[in-house]
Length: 361
Image 1 (tube, rainbow, N blue to C red):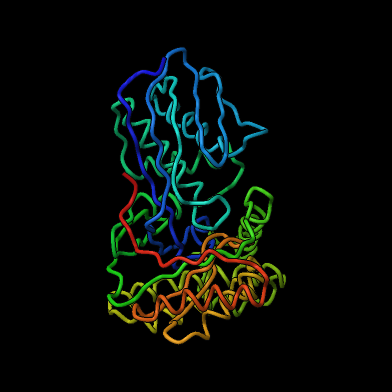
Image 2: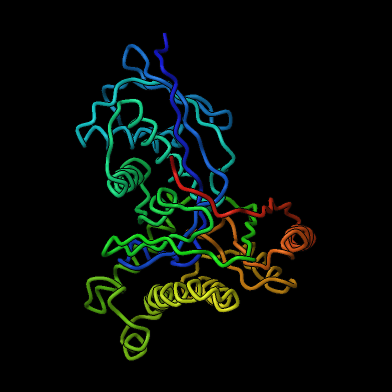
C-alpha cells in the first residue's frame, strides 16, 4: 500500500542559446530554462519496490535493492541512475512509487533527459528530507546519464534547468563552475521549432564528437580546446582536416559565448542574433551535427521579417531549432515557420513561442 505524503518536484526543459558541445570541452555555455518541463509526483512505498510510470512511456517496476541499467524501457535508466547516484552520496533511497507528467517530448533537443533526472533527484531529496548543494545535484544527474544511459554529456543541461531564472539567460563556466544569470533583452522572444526528426544521443554520434574533440585537444597538446584561441588554431596546419573542423567549432563557439554575454548585458539583440546564425553555420560546416531538416528550419526563419537569428539547439543530429525574434513579430514568425516548413519538407512541426522561465523546484 502506498505511503503518504504525496510529494512532487518539477524541472524545466532548456534551450541552448550558445555553447554547442563546449561543456565537455571545459568551455563556457549560455542557456535558458523554458516554460515546459516534467513533474515527478509520488510517495514512499512498502516492500522496497521502485515503480515509475508515464502515460507516454509506460510503467517500470524494479526491485529497489539492486539497481542496474535496463536493456528494455531505457527511458527509466535516467531515473534509476539518479537513485544509484544519490545512494552513493549516502542518501538511503528506499522504495517509492511515482508518476511522470509534463509536456517535454523525448528527442526534441530540449533536454527532457536532464529534466527527468533533476525532477527525480529533487523529488527523492524531498521524499527523504535531505539537501544537497545545487551543483552537487547537477553533477549527480550528469553521472547518472554517463553510467546508466551511456551518454557522456556535459553539465549544460542540468545547470541550465536547475539555475534557470525567469527572463534571464544562464551562463556557466564549465572549468571554474561559475554560474551567472544575465537579463534577457526586453522586447525579444524565443521560438522553438521541432524538426520532426528525433535524436538519440546514445546512438553514438554524440560520444563520437566527444572523442574527436578530445583527440583534437591531444593533438594540440592542450588540456582542453578551451585553452586554444581561433588565432592560434589557424597556425596549426598539421591538424587533420576533420579534427581541425571539430576544434574550430568549439574554439569559436567559446568566443561566441563570451561575446554574447556582452551583447546581452548591452541589450544588443541584433548582435546576439548574428552570433546564433554564425553558430549554426559552424554546426553545419565544422561540427556536422546539423541535419537537412534543421538547416531548412533555420534558413526559413532567417528570412522572415522580425527575425534576428536562428540555430539548432542542443546536441544536434535532429531535435529542434531556436529563433530569436522581435516580440511583436512572434506570432506571425511562428505561423509562417510552421507553414513554410510543412510546405517544403512535408513535416508538420510543433512550433512554440517560449517564455524564459524559472528553474527546477
